[in-house]
Length: 244
Length: 321
Image (cartoon, rainbow over all chains, first blue to last red; front, side, top):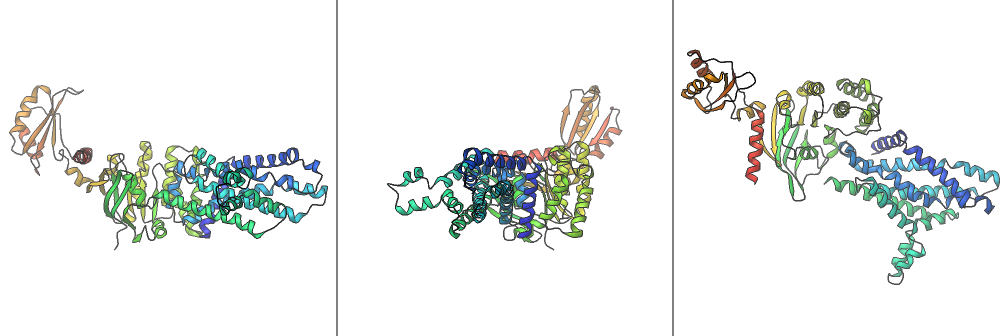
């Protein structure tokens, strides 16, 4: 199980770097996160030694960058026919699904790690709470994983990458804002209290903001890991189902 | 000894279309089975089920005794598969792609190095090893596909249209490669090029509308052609009438086919079909010796696979309709 997983993961990672995908993703992610932090987030004006104005943009950056990264994951294999190669190799399907996901997650982790200059900057300028920053990085990484698992799953549905992108962006958006007043207003009034709190509890934003504030709760981490597990499981089922 | 490939009752339905309809056959080591059929007959679908890419609606496929449904990994290990169109990751080079396949197949150490070396040498990929696959010509892409199929030296090879789109030299090379491996392996190739069947297959299986309509050696199939053992005589136009009269008089000649339009050499052609199971060449040559009729050419037809192919695939279509 582990050897095939690592084989797939290595190939996927190599393919990010063999194409301009890696370069474009990293450059855009770094440039946008810096621009948003300094110009829109008013990093300097706030005059506070923390990275709130940096991390608060992550859900929105992921919202359109991650679907762009995951849209090819399975759709391209179906389009080019390589799926036929991949699924006739003697490897268990869960290992292939996990390997592809892990490669995307590690890659996103790399992009996230490359934002380290801003962490150095804030430490030079003041005395931030580095515990909160580490927790936020960790939370951002977990949230990216949740976005990625949704993208991977939906990419398996179609061989059209545009459709995969749009579907992923929509579902990720719903997950991100499900705790917002607009969405909750839609449910309140007719839906039972239980459903209302369930929908509110699905929000990526709520869980991430909790971690960002430095309130490290196991439940927030557990939430993101559950989302990842659920969508990767569905990913496996969809790939298996499309064989029939 | 168990058969290398044992297929029984394989069935696949796509919506209202019955793509493969209870196909059963077995192939042993040393056989090269040519899988023939018109486009859309179910060749590729059958191959996809044999290799475990598609799950059949009914029936089972066993590879070297391993059931594809209950023990897919063991069965897949025994197969080398070239899917239709030889798909490969375009951004990889043949070297990195083949290494990936070797790892995915769990080859390690000396076995891995040997497998890579052999596959690369056999498919003549030495000069393109470090060019991205998407920049390679169709012929090289096909060879990359073949190289990955034989990398782990599998006892069973399933090749879907291995020579499709190649130039005559490349076709020859691929056929030579298949011939070289034939003795030690069990090979299924699909094709719609009939000369290929004569060139490399020890057995041909014709499939139409998802059903097997003919199964035998290429020679067996040729004997089912009306042209089998027919004799064609090429003669001058002015002698045509006498020739027809002479051939008609022979007891074992059943019917004649006359082409009275002179060809580019100014010659006309008469084909004599024998009564069932008769050889008529001796009678005809004896009769011709005794007369003064001009004969430019005389040939015994072996029977054409194309005719048999058309006969069995079209008659089936008529029956269905």
